[in-house]
Length: 251
Image (cartoon, rainbow, N blue to C red; front, side, top):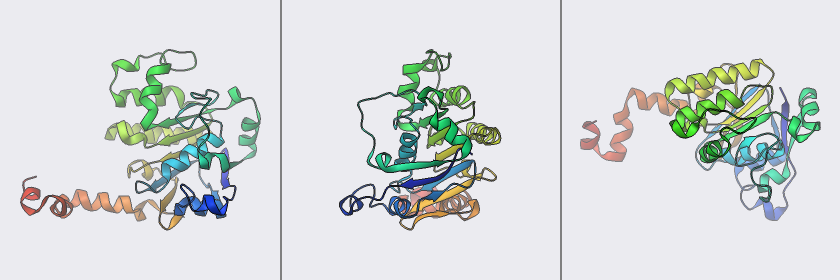
């Protein structure tokens, strides 16, 4: 592992009442910090719970651009850090500290952010240090897999924000295998996701974020797993509340 704890400088009383510090998970982070206990950590929770905000701030604390990309390369030098990124601190392991203390170009890692990934992919395709395949001729899912295969290869800190957005079921399985390989090779992954498939990775730490704050949860106890299980068993039980009985029965 490279990072063993995430800490945050205490916000002022005024900041504590504003976004993002008013979010229960961020407020808990500021009070207690977060202990990372496995090479792969998943952040899960409803939209607006702070998952993306936290993974962006972790990226900035490691010297990555909050909009995505690889370590050692900034895509918007005039862009200030996010409010949480300004205050976040990563406590590295001895291995991580050696990497973090070196020159910026010596850092290893990548931030794959679904919202901005396609723009970055098109901008850097073919440049030295990236991939040579032309992602403009690929589907979004194929482009994601090209980035993953090329950039998630060495020991480093790899951050992802909802990578499943462009991936099929089988492609998500490939991503699970890639995460396992990175963890086994000394790398570390922190991933914000809504996917019960990804979070099923054996040995991963799962942090559920919500109004309760942040808590470690076993995969089978996740709310998202329970909802998917119930929906796939009986879609009508959910759809009848949205579509009405007649429309739901026509599925």
